Length: 334
Image (spheres, rainbow, N blue to C red):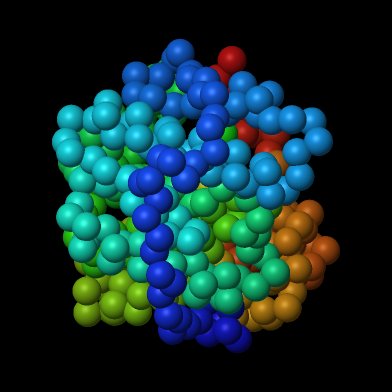
């Protein structure tokens, strides 16, 4: 059943129209955020520019045109020779050659279809405008862009890509090699398709990593793993305790630098796969209602029929693993 939920599908690419033709766009009055170093639209102000009686078609055209204008302005603000291209479902900004950009768009189109088929009704693809993919020419460009969305004093973990669910959700990466970029696209597009659900962060990442490994089997090849299973088990045992597990449940563990973030992703992958493998129907029902406020505790009892700590026990053994949201609030900065 895990193969059905996270299974690989083969799909054909769609023809990519030329989306850089500004004459084909709806005229849109742009509004920009003043608190950003690089150009980012003020999407709340942009929303006010829509007529009250705008239908779905007009809303889609409006936001799609705004996104295309944004990418043109962002391209001019970046140091390398960035340009915009697009396909039926995607807008891409990169400094890649026309051939490489077309390959990325084809990969995005194939990934979208495969992920939607894998996730089924859990996936939502009904947003306004096309998906935006930013592929930065260097890690410096990537870091400069992504850092705009971080809170003051927030330490950013090392990453090769991120889905930014702010205003007009989009994802960014700094890899231009297709193999590396393909993994980022699958991972972040999974986040985008699940963004409408109030999922706890561990489940969001568990979905993304499992879908990534299922659609790109090379990533799950044990011969390429940095650690043997017994070594990974030992690392888990050394790291997780009654305190660090609350960082996992709250989502804080996914936003730190160092060993903890790697182990958080691996633990999320393992327990998500375990829950899906045991009963796919119950797992889908769980994912549809799981809420980050309690890490999905109430939903687990209602749909899976057991508390979340049972999943952790299957990986780490007995311990004080239950989510305790009251501790998350106490640990939050004032």
